[in-house]
Length: 96
Image 1 (cartoon, rainbow, N blue to C red):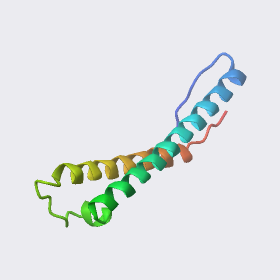
Image 2 (image 1 turned 90 degrees about the horizontal axis):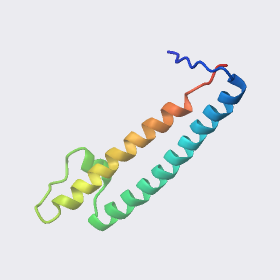
Image 3 (image 1 turned 45 degrees about the horizontal axis):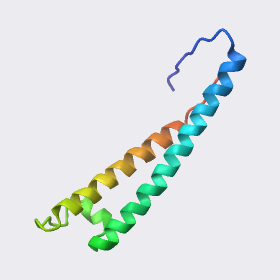
Image 4 (image 1 turned 30 degrees about the horizontal axis):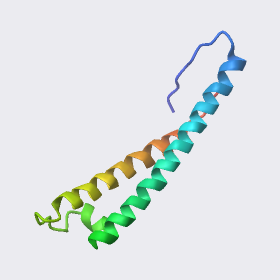
């Protein structure tokens, strides 16, 4: 595991700020994940596609649905990115 070092003249004040910032970011990411999952469900239902099949490249993109399918693909990629960020923060440990 790699380390990041932060110097502060007042460690007792800096630690709670860092912990709060990390927790706030986790909450924001969790909220974003929830909204993204809802949007994916709505788009998948309206397009009548399975997101996993779409991401596997097994669904054709006819011109009439291309933009909607691209939006769903983008939302799926965003969701993966948000989950990766949250997972990274969950593994973060502050060592005073």
